Amino acid sequence: MNKRAALRTLGATAMAMMLTTVPAWAADAFPSRPIKLVVPYAAGGTIDNMARILSPKLQALLKQPVIVENRAGGGTTIGADAVARADADGYTIFLGSNAAFTISPQIMPKVNYDPLKSFAAIGTIASFPNLILVKPDSPFKTLASVIEAARKSPGTLSYASFGIGSTAEISGEAIKASAKVDIVEVPYKSGALTVQAVLAGEVNFGFDTAVGSVSRVKNGQLRALATTSAQRYPELPDVPSISEAGFPGAEMVAWVAAFAPAQTPATVQATLATAFQAAVADPEVKASFSNLGVVVKYVGGEETMKEIRKEYDRVGGLLKQVKIQMN
Image (tube, rainbow, N blue to C red; front, side, top):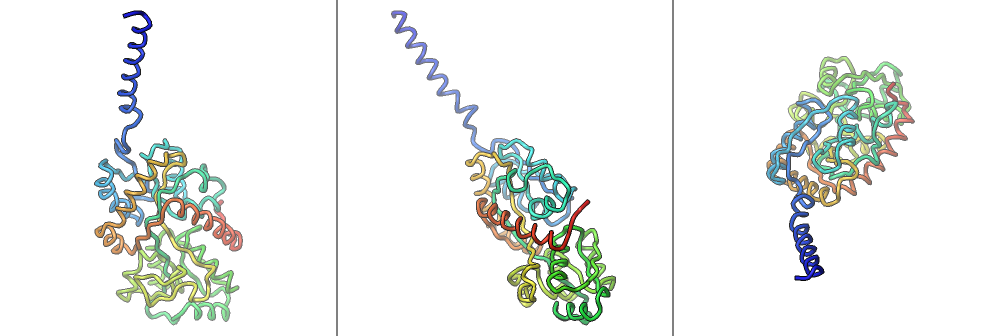
């Protein structure tokens, strides 16, 4: 064999080795190791419960462990920031809600991520409104009767929200601004505490999530004057929506969606989206979510980001109108 032929043979051998070895490191199928599902709330809350219902289904679909990690605090921005800074490889997923995207970034002095640019939405998986609640023996039968009483006696009525910057406070303050009435807000640390305040008569009415109080309304422990959704809530078909009650501008529906860091490859996003969509379509997951008071509503990633941008602008205008800020 002459020198030139030997070089050609050597080159062909090297190329063959490259072609057979590149896929081993460059084309590993996703996922090939455990996935972390970050929840920005403490264990035991609604979104944490949802994550733990989803985890085994996602694990079966993706054929890798899906580990729930709680990163609470900062109005959910601590968990969001951790995911925004994670490697964009699909192995760290954020299970977030309005708080991290359309509320906290607009009322806090500073957050370390861009809610509209730091993430790629995998898809919305569920949504639920708040309920406006009174004791069963309350003289108020409708939201209109509350407003009428507030006009007659400014500053004497009060309502319970579950915290500064919460969806409850935004709806409550929007109702006040629209009706031009003076009702005192009493913020509590959770929906469970607002329910206790309503039942104890500490306030005239209060807000809780549908997740927290659908069962209480059904069993007669509380009466719902309205939901904060534009349409009636399927679990409580006899309760008017906030739009029907005359305050469409006070609509606030909590949603829960999955997100990856912004630069996550499209193929990885697609794999995750397929898994999440299949998981929430599972009858067991639907039933478990329903028991929590959560309605499954899958929306694709692109549409989710469109809706977040629209909500960001709408909520931003509302927050300025009612002057909600965190120092």
